Image (tube, rainbow, N blue to C red; front, side, top):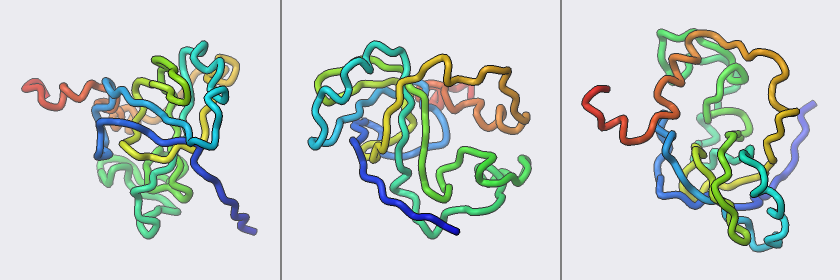
Length: 165
């Protein structure tokens, strides 16, 4: 039985990045502006945490392009075809993204963060403080292809223009 539900954005990403790219998010700074229906006090105390988990919607993904089975990550046939739930691609069934970001500052209903891989205007559906107790309690393991895929993901954008690449 499929259950459906509705969500509404709690805020919006304010960023200089207009286009979603696969890599070079390492120096990204942006803000999350809470919707006017929320009081600024909804963010009270979040600035005392070093990190926040941001849940957002890949709203620019055409619902017709959503993947419900397996595919090669980034369409790279050198990597194995794996189920959509074994990767973090944006063409997922509910188009929900999740990133742990560094909290930079808080000003009223605006939370400034570093390393959020979402673009200008992205709807934010939730914010959660990152607590050690919710992080993995054992070693994290992953296949080699995923480390290869992430090789340049958190590099600064300036690196893509570097002659060394």
